[in-house]
Image (cartoon, rainbow, N blue to C red; front, top):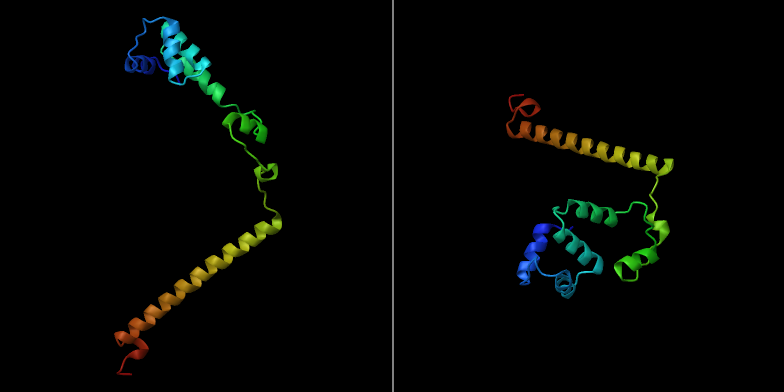
Length: 142
């Protein structure tokens, strides 16, 4: 995302100014590894009176394309590395009714076991407290 302040700072760091010719600015940007399109946009931005919002919106539009085909060949071209994608793994996973029933049963068993465990711990604590304090059926006077 190009910004006029960033470009001015970049030129200052490289001992250059906006007053230099377009060719000299382009040479500096090329030496820094900028692409031709980025260099052209940067020079246009420096010579215009805007702050770059038009260019940042253009860059966002170029960078995000929802209709883009994410095939292995296209990704390999974009990333510069070999990418192999199995299309069957990209599909969304839909549960069948049998799978949903199995998951529901597992949830029920889990919740029921937690409830049984909690009731068991509570009963054990209550009986243990009654024995320790000798109350109820553990009262020695009975």
